Image 1 (cartoon, rainbow, N blue to C red):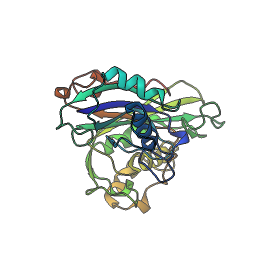
Image 2 (image 1 turned 60 degrees about the horizontal axis):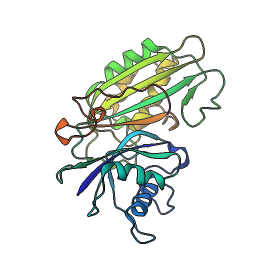
Image 3 (image 1 turned 90 degrees about the horizontal axis):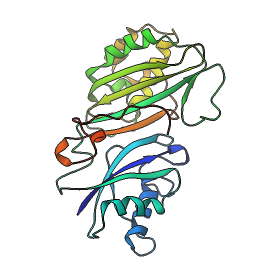
Image 4 (image 1 turned 90 degrees about the vertical axis):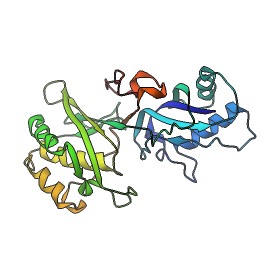
Length: 274
């Protein structure tokens, strides 16, 4: 049987999603919890695949994973039982049996992220690690003008980390919406991204350049020059991981996953850090 899970996690304490020798990753914690719930021998792991790897410090609001198992349990039991063995900052939100041909990564039609940025003369305190920060006021109109130039199918080499293993730097950025929450010098900005796929550090590198434009250090048209250069050297530095959230992948409704994970469903909107 193949089972799909929706996972939510706070990434502050972890070295990203993907399993590491240290054992301090979200995947490590999830696979160990699944093995305990399944009653496997001590030290065993249940191998999982995820829809999108996240870096150290990045959070997940709807990471989707799948795994194969011969153990027959009710989906609700998989959710509740696995959560019993997970740390407080990781929780399974739902569990659904899926056909063997479903693949959480290959079957995804799109992926979504949101970057939450605090604009304030004072650095974050209670929200430290959960929001990015700009001590300077940002020009929303300038950032939206730049965002409009980024939407579409482009070679995003200028926003690609050197360690990126993607076969092609060409991605289809389908949506980049920027909204401001609050007035005055203290407010929050939400940057929502949707694409067929993303390159390693692509969003954080885009954020660095968008914030540079928002501060008035570059004009909006500069973003086109950066795109056309196809060189990481010309873009702004990589922005902090603190405010980045994986909103999750989107699938065809035929897989029977929750509505917020499908194109036909009502996509969950971001309303603040969990």
